[in-house]
View 1 (cartoon, helix red, strand yellow):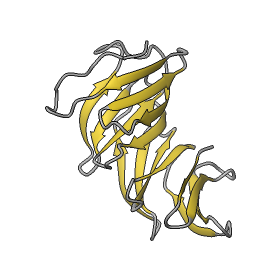
View 2 (view 1 turned 135 degrees about the vertical axis):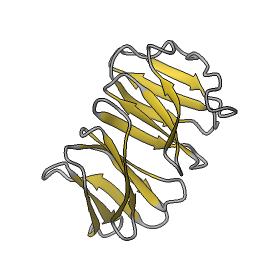
View 3 (view 1 turned 90 degrees about the vertical axis):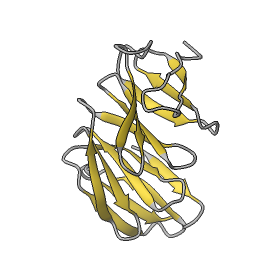
Length: 174
């Protein structure tokens, strides 16, 4: 179950226990349902807000991400790019990029506006995680992404956006 809150507007987002394929937008003070976001074919594993609060991103065991307009509950776009369950999705602090973590042992970094793949972090290309990557945290420093995995490791990645296939630093913390 994942929950995220924002101060403005006053709402919270949580996944739904009934079938875990939908999630609910709740009024933070009242707990009343404001929107029901349904569109995944399997369990929703993560939900995140864009930094400006205009969109919600959900990840699922159906290997997809959905981007939602929170005000209307409308599905804006469905994205596919992983070959196994997507555990986590996070926006960069400026909202221009997003990163996804998957059971396929990879982290993918995307252009948030166009959903164009910019970077892939996996064992084949880098000293990546050897098992499922479960959680991500995008640091306030734009170029640092923290990941944790079932291999019991935490890595801090130095990510450069100077070029599409530019250098990707090895983990700062093995």
